[in-house]
Amino acid sequence: MVIVADIFFITVQSYRILWTGLSAQFARDVHFSAICWSTLEPIRRKLLVLMGDEDGAGSILGANFTAGFVAGSIAAAVTSPLDVEKIRRQLEVSNF
Image 1 (tube, rainbow, N blue to C red):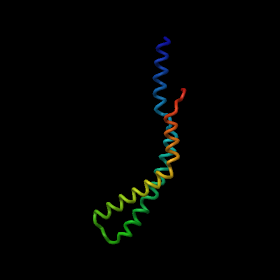
Image 2: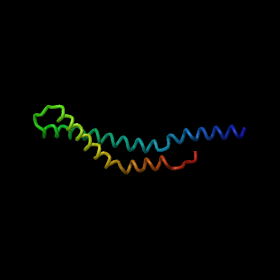
Image 3: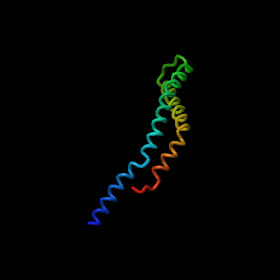
Image 4: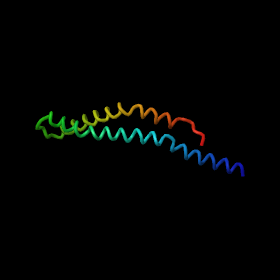
């Protein structure tokens, strides 16, 4: 009976470990997405205006790529401390 209880405890604990750091993950992802998506479109529009009347696929692709790179870089720089906290929480040993 003790062996069955130990196996059950280990199984439950292993599933709980999967959820370790979930709150930190959400705290990082919500801010990252908010910053990234709120800056992406204004940057893309400004780049397209700077390029002028070029409606070619290459200029649109370049503007989209550059805007995504800049918006993602800004969001990553701002949310980096939250990402560090997320990793620390996911790696910590917990006693459930």
